[in-house]
Length: 401
Image (cartoon, rainbow, N blue to C red; front, side, top):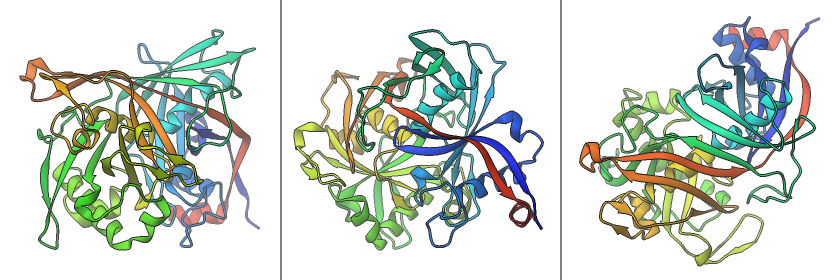
């Protein structure tokens, strides 16, 4: 008879994603491989049928996530947030990136778990995203010492309304240490195995992201996520482009290495000019409701909404002249300063996400790069369940052998 490990955990929705959150103290006695085994079991991976039926995962990348939270001893930092993207079909936990949606659940978790002092009516939680070394401040509504989940704020992709959480990302550009444009170019051409070349923009804000014109690869940026997933040749080409960018960035030595090991970073997104389209739930979006359309691919499947981290990269890229994103957004510029005011509105499969980005030319580099003092987004979050994750001994041993 096998026994179960019982690990305290909280199951949350953050933005349009879900994750299992752990205290770092509860995983401290385990090594890295054992920690991954616990997370894989909690989510129900690997599942070759892609359902994660034996865990809390939802069978797609946005619903297959985990995070480890710890109090911080660093100055101007309350908690540290270590994010894990869990592969649905394979026994792989990728710690290389971060998640803007799950970031919205970190502040409420810190408040409800007693990791920060609570100040009504809004508590500011200062967070370090360990994976990228970047910081953000979560402005979380509180009542009676607890984070509030109920409210009247609506985000596309989540049914109903919730309490608005403001996420203020401080200097989010350059997670690789090479600025907004990590290769130094607003556009570049990547060679494909077929001999074709594809023009892309690689932008590093919150997470390195490769942007491709949908028309250049035969994609339809107004299409549903399901329709894009059904186009297996398109998905193959996009994964090749993503892996080529990973090699270009020095994250991997080969395309095979990127495909097998570097699954969560860089991200890749199709972009195109604004147009009318229908969301996954049949709602009609008029062309004037968005500044551009985008479809993100995560772990080789089309995101059903839009990743929070990629939304930040998109909003910044829309204001950087010469990128394929700024072309799609048809942005006008005055000299070397973006003329845009107000948020960038990104049309995605579930609706529209507005993102405020402060983008400025980096005069110290003669305008060859850009500074991003802050990016602000608004999300909702909810604690769904709290208790223990049960990890059968035989499964734990099988994943750590």
